[in-house]
Length: 563
Image 1: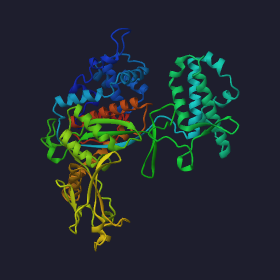
Image 2: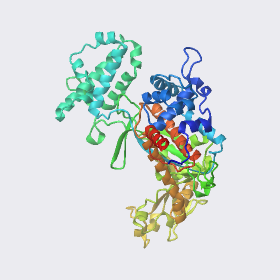
Image 3: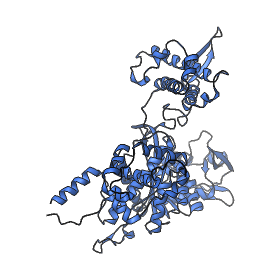
Image 4: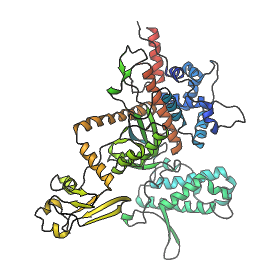
């Protein structure tokens, strides 16, 4: 016979513990006060969170509002409430994005948890990122060119059909752009592919010229698909003239192939249907078109355990690790560029940690110093070791063998010789100091081969400014200790959070197009994961980080009642 304590469903527990989590007043800026009455935006926000908890489609979420009693209880609805059409959720997301309220759901949850004492500044947090695949099909350069022309034609045909009939009556276009470019087999031979690519480019230039002609309505130029076509032509094609003065359209080629050059990956379009997605690579086996998401969460150790107030027989259990910040970028943005923005987001929520654990991709000597000075936190991260030939070979005199006299701007080598020059400069946009020893001292030195292999027969060092150099050397020395390595193990837990986000909410595959809506999806996913963890905390049982579907939980409940 089943004798376990019956637990309330997650929506019921959320309502009991947090009350009205999302108030309508918080979303007032995105919804008008006049017109036909609509659904409560606060309820729609909570529905969107439950939708991420269950990983439901819009139709499934709308059906759950009509049929699931726990959802009705959490939303404060009557039992006979008919719910709403599934399209309302899409309209809600669009309004939230249009008014810049993507972060609001997480802000409201964090504020409620701060009031309850479950979140506070200080302590430890950790951050990691993972790739997110866009919601559009991958296209090669040839498919991209043709699809951009086709998408622009579709947009113009829908917006100004009479203009298209009068201006764009060109032979072959109806046949060429009737179906999606990636829906039919492209030519196999390279000459045929080049011919088709030039045709796409020529058609694109004709189309843009017609839109920008004096006789065409000016508002046609503002269509997003037309602007995307224009950008694609700039990035992938050039127009030249041959010996006879005839205009020739040809595709751009990389500079290393003697071509005109291609734009950097961070600017290059990958699809006319999601202009924010970008191609990126990580290592030798991961390539994707889309985005990256950065997740920050609190992290506790055994020393942080507290006595449970929820019937855990007085046993000490660790408080839940909760997500405190989510940042979304296109796939080409490096992790190190997001460290400062993550700290800014945590500061705005009043949740700056005392120690922030990140991997080496987020760190630099400059960031270690700036995090301490600007935010008063310690960036706990492995830094890159000395990359000089001597350090890599582990023989000879590396940087640590030299003594720096910052006050007198002088460096002394292991043989007691002093530097001849101290030259502040800027290297790759970063302040640096180049120190050079005199040739007269280095050339006759008996251990010169252990110090330098320079053809100039002298040693040269590159230093950071004093605070940064000293912080870098201290970090390099500290990370070799067993104590630091044991301490840093806590960072690995964030990978479990990424796994949970992928398993529960499908985080690695974007549902929507455009970085704003993708970020909104990530924020609601973070809120959903926090509620799942809080539900485990309130019920005083270990958290199963795997996915348990709504249907599976109903089946378990029925089995328990039957027993």
